[in-house]
Image 1 (cartoon, each protein chain N blue to C red):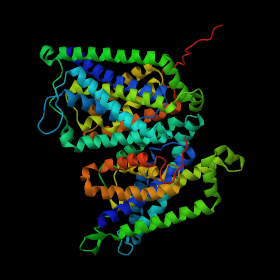
Image 2 (image 1 turned 90 degrees about the vertical axis):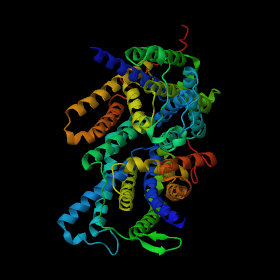
Image 3 (image 1 turned 45 degrees about the horizontal axis):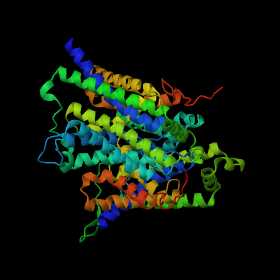
Image 4 (image 1 turned 120 degrees about the vertical axis):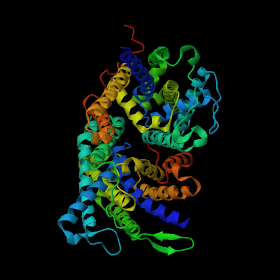
Length: 304
Length: 315
């Protein structure tokens, strides 16, 4: 039970990062972006490429940090991945979404995002192969915190969780203390009025894509680190990440961060009752439960 | 010669069945602007429903009621419609994102349930034990397939005819009104949530009909038949053909199905052996490209919607 809870919190922290970026995009561009989860794949694979480049060119970076399986090279690769995934999110907007937005067809964006997800996912499969990969083949033993009940935690998991919590804190300060935070809220509530007040819509949209992509990259690397890297990361995580945004209320960033943990914990606790084959259905059950009890989510406001 | 002919019959049967599903999607997306991200769930509900109701009794799972075939098919359609009703009633009052996400979710959950629940529909090995109707009179050969094709074509034309009348009727006008401007429709005393639900359930029943025919044709259905890819294919068909245009939807179904099967054949024939594992991925990229480029280049499709003026003004 406690082990399930711990695993759930860890999975939840990954979902939080993915959902925060997704809900930001849904907040200001008002469409369900089904290609967002593919940004997690892009992040995971970009980090893998840079990790191997750094390990090959700068051997002194191959040392592991403390008792983690994460090397200095991977930390550096994460920074590159964060930047490049953010840039690729902007690129997808430039190539696809911006053009459709300018035609004034909001609903077609959902369609386009499905098509884009299909392209990205299968191109990744074609480039990197369909088999699973790992950042490090070294086996890191979990630290056993308690024998009865058995509770084990890997150092990597702890670091993942700490970094996520740190990022959530940063997001909080950005939202509540910076001009960007205010303009994000203003654009979400009323784009025209926000522009009248001197907010540059184009810059805000670019920043949202970049931040959303960056957060997705981190989530992707953490997922790859704690599980494995496959081209199916996107299709496996798209529903849980969406469930997190719905739990929190679509458009609410705090809601998405919170929703991520709820979905992560619920998905792991559910495995106590349900056979593990049913785990892909759990996010859908959570969505249905939220729609029945509180349709606009925990922090959402109704808006059509 | 008979080989080519029987392949043509096979191809036309599948394309026509898919065209029925595309017509169902057109009612939802083309006419009403409802985004259905889980076409395959309603298609699958129809297929599984028909086979469970009309199949012979099996020891390892429920169903096998051996109902008279048309009743089994109708039952499959009702199951698909009920599933749509549940999803619709929960989401159609909310902003449109919710419908998109929930329909996508219902497809994932449906496939997952069918794959795991052995007691329900045979699990991963699929649903067997269905006798194709009139098999004793028509046999298993070419004659059966040809007769089946004729039935499918009649049903396709029936659905087309029904939808054409529907689109021209006051109800069709109401659907377009809600798609274009919900607030204006509401100000005229219409209830958009209820009308949307009707269109969503109606479209899903048509998808269920397509699924039922598909299951009947193969006398077998398994989780492999209800993978998310089918949803993407059906969309590509509608977008290429032209959302809002029923003729376009049927044309798109045949065009995309021809492109899909021929690209699959070419890849399996000419791709090197070591690359055979990746031919699926190449085809998926192609379908994705078709969807995205059509939306960018010609969002109205090859056959754009023809706006009908239902009541021409008297002059």
